[in-house]
Figure (cartoon, each protein chain N blue to C red):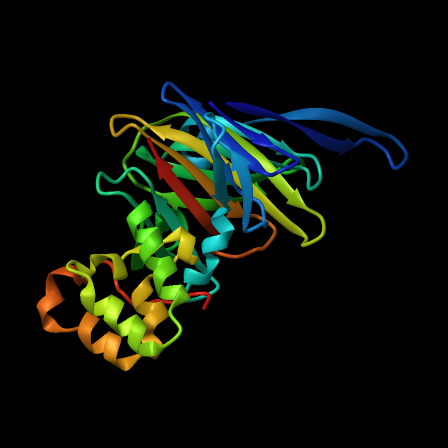
Amino acid sequence: MYLHLPHQTHQSQNVANVTAKEVDINDEYQIASIKSVIYDQEEKFYYVLSNKFEEKLGFFVIKVSEKDPSDKRFLIKWKNKLDIGDPNMFILRNYESKLKELIVSYKTIYINTYNVICMDVSVEDDQLMIFRHESF
Amino acid sequence: MGLLLAENKDFIHLSKAGMHVLSLGSQEQRAIKDINGADRMIHSLESCNFLKVDRNNYLVFECSKPDGRAVSVQQEYSKGDGSGEETLFQHLLSVKLCEVTLRELLLFNSLYVCKTLSEIIDIVNDQPDPQVFYKSFLELNGTNMVSILSFDSRSMSYLLSDQFAQHFSKEYPLFYRNKI
């Protein structure tokens, strides 16, 4: 998967040309089997859901800056060895409590359960998971 | 297929089995009608936050277990450095949520209308199977009757006696944080 990112080159002091910089995020972040991508217009970040990291199966969510692909952060690296499918991602915003939640849903192949995960992305913390609901 | 309703903050999951609704909002509970027109109460996931031992704990709602629904309190943590870092979870406790029967509801109602403590003790001691007192119900705000009756030492000495040891399990503790 490639991201086309704006990249500024200054030819003179007054003139700025905008060209595209293409980054293969599979190679850049060592991920594969990208299942879903969502864009957060407020913060100008992408949230990427991947099923593989360093060739290991699991549940991986990466927050990537729109402007600089090297500005990235793994929100979760859960190597649960499970194939996932049928994914959906949503951003839930509560302006009163200033909460921003990332809702990720997917089904796990073979064990046939449907999972809904709620993560708090309004804080720069290591513990982001709030809820996980698992059902058939 | 899943979709999120912005107004109620409900998550809808459509499958072959039908439609599942998850309440993700802050409203603890609200009344709805099911497909048959029966009154139902939908509890939000947030309504179980009182189970958390620490603010950073996270809750797992295990509704795919063959023996019923359970809510587990877990702690998320990271192990390793750099690219070798991995997210892991430590299990803290679990609460099994049972579905209440009409007989159990009538029993609870009988306990609430008792005017004296001795009447409560009589009802507790008269039960041939005291399992109902160890079960947790959403109707009791996620707690069980043992916790509710814990103010009375005589009921406790009966319910926690060794003769009912088969009802006590390490996996599902009887006493945990509650709203009462």
